[in-house]
Image 1: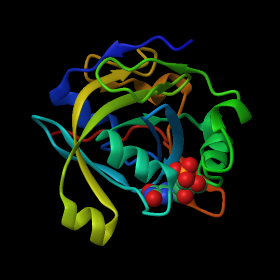
Image 2: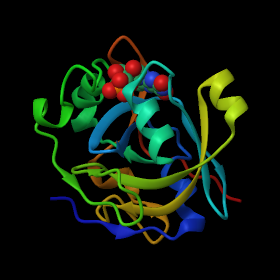
Image 3: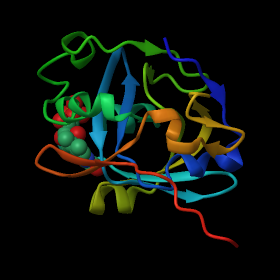
Image 4: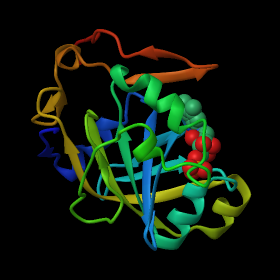
Amino acid sequence: MSTLIPVELPKAYRLLNHGPTVMVSSAHDGAVNLMSAAWSMPLDFEPPKVAVVIDRNTLTRGLVEGSGEFVLNVPSSEQAALTVAVGSASGRDVDKFAEHGIRTLPARVVKAPLVDGCLAWLECRVIPEPHIEATYDLFLAEVVAAWADPAVFADGHWKDNQGGRRSIHYIAGGQFFETGPAVEVEK
Ligand SMILES: Cc1cc2nc3c(=O)[nH]c(=O)nc-3n(C[C@H](O)[C@H](O)[C@H](O)COP(=O)(O)O)c2cc1C
């Protein structure tokens, strides 16, 4: 099981600042689900906020609308195949957790679970914006708790080479780039 340490909320944006593809977990009314999202981003420092596109045809959309909550799970490159798989089938047709043997941990604030083995997790509460949700499938949310695996992110910083476990960045057609070495410049 993953080891988690809390990430200070004003530093939570750093979990997404480099643009990793995420998996969105959601739960409502007894249903739990997981889908992938390449289109998410941090939106503010304090309180931290995120934006994510959740297509109107997904099961996730209904669960997020019903509960007003979701978790952004940041997968590692070892979870690239899983990320494509949960983004290629609907929870309407299959229990993705059973099908892929996905283990979960309870979140602290929201009902949606944290996916075991990820690098970082952001628990999010939707900020209702009906117009942009309906027009662009775009959801804004406040980050109400954030966690990271201390082997990859600690003291508000990603470790060098993320401890050897890289996050992933979706291109298309099952292809990703993985995060590479850090490039530092003097400020
Ligand atoms: C790598 C990857 C990234 C994706 N990014 C997004 C995204 O940003 N937003 C979105 O609505 N769907 C995205 N999708 C598609 C959903 O994950 C897909 O429709 C999923 O099957 C929905 O599952 P659900 O019906 O169980 O909620 C992506 C799929 C993949 C494979």
